[in-house]
Amino acid sequence: MNPRTPRSILAAIAVVLGTSLALAGPLTPPAGPVISTGKTLTEVEPRIAINATNTPGDADSMFRITQPGSYYLTGNITAIATRRGIEVESAGVHIDLNGYSVIGVSGALSGIRIGIDSPGCTIQNGRIINFPAGGVVSSSSTTVRNLEVRSNGSTGISVGPSSFVENCLAASNAGLGIDVDDGSVVRDCIATLNTTGGIQIGARSRVERSSAIGNTGLGIDMSNVTYAIHCYAADNTTRGFVVSDQSSLENCQAYSNDLDGFDIGFGVRISNCEAMLNGLHGIRAGSSCVITNNHCRLNGAAGTGAGIHVEATRSRTLVMNNQVSSNDIGIDVDATLCLIKGNTSTSNSIAFDIAANNRVTIILNLATNAAAISGSAGGTSVTDPDANYVF
Image (cartoon, rainbow, N blue to C red; front, side, top):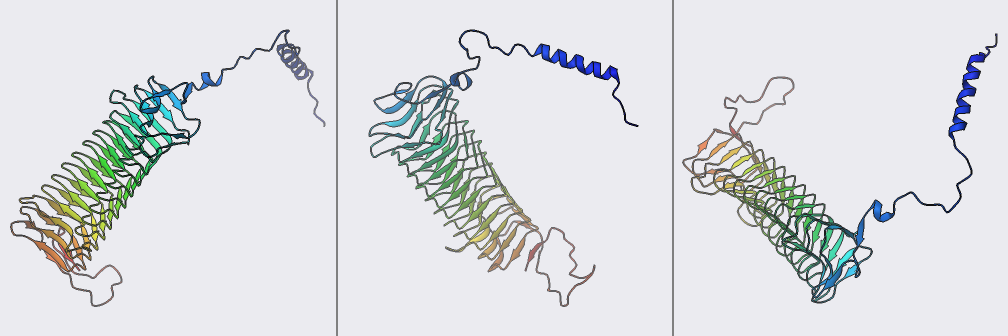
């Protein structure tokens, strides 16, 4: 039997259709000109172009910003001698280079300078190159992100306290690559081939997922009470990391630096790091350090080097659960009152070289198993779970 649509349903559909048509309104437009009800581009994104009209320069700058707001480039800027590219003399200025370059010449000043009383500024998204007095120069709290800062005659990026530098490349500058003052954060940056060092961070600062490669001088220089995680320093002409008092490092790597991989000061904690192929020591430690779960191998390429070297008098340093392999000396302790336990020394010329008056758990050189082991029994019985091992 074919179903039939009840008359009540057809009536309801007719009512709905009639109502929809009634609400649609007339199709004939009203008389008079059509007036836009939308917003202008300036109302949607109230940014100001950096140009001679909006941001006129002065005797030492091509362009000068004196009011807070959001500014952007519409093309490359090339400075002239005795002038900097952009000067900021206001707090709360946001500059978007918009993918363009700020280019210096011989005799010019810095690329972008932010005054001492101009906190809360941001510079992003572009290139700053060839300025004799440096790329970004700020004495105030500044955010710098997504910049390539290259071939400047001084430090690439230099910013004041409480600054944030992210996703920047600082390369071939005749100074430091990146220099941040106290209380700052450097994240996801690369400093390479700079003349006086890679990355320098002030006290109570943090550096994350950043690399310093092939710099003349230090790779990453950390002031007091700083923290580094997932950072990398390689092929620098002195040390990979220099770490001042009461700081911490985790999951960092130091490879092929001319002197030490890590040079750590008083009370520094270093864990889960790797030091390989450095000219002298993998980790060179001062007093009261905590050195745990690190891997140091093949150090001493330029002289007698240890995987871990503790050298301060009355050090009281803890050296625990590290693996040292193929160094001149595995663990070298010249200090006193240290605790050395649970470490493994493999294929070093000297496994352990430890001065008198330290606490050292038993050092075991386990015998090689004579036959293959298959199953759940075999090996050598060990009574001290904190023993140091040699093989």
